[in-house]
Length: 127
Image (cartoon, rainbow, N blue to C red; front, side, top):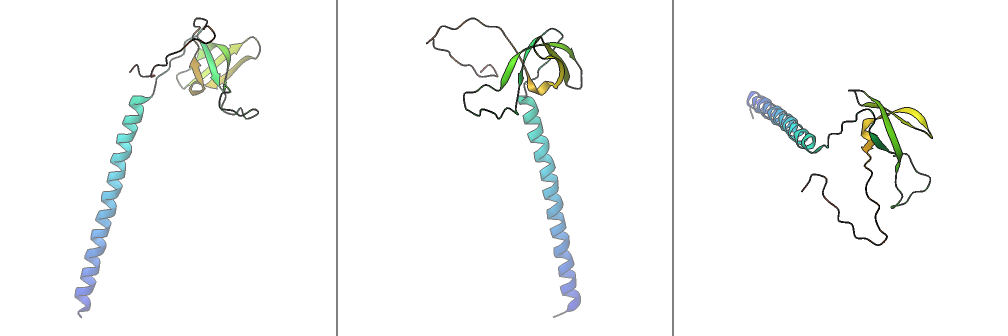
């Protein structure tokens, strides 16, 4: 067995292995870019203006866990919204405080629903 030939073969195998690793790295980058584009297309954009009514999602509510317990708390008025995503909200009972806009949803005052009425739900994307 020739040591030079075996050494050359080993170096060639290492180079091929390095190329496979770099190809896998590039494929991961492409996959991440595609999934980011897919995710960004499906995000529902929310803009809050001064005076809007919003409800606050409380993800830390653990006192009475249950499937049907709402984790959203009352109607708040938007006092100020910044481009960075911080929103200052106000209510009579709690005063004003700053929250991240991801924890807020627009509050729409709807019609009163009769007891026992059937409600049809729609997809958020309008489909």
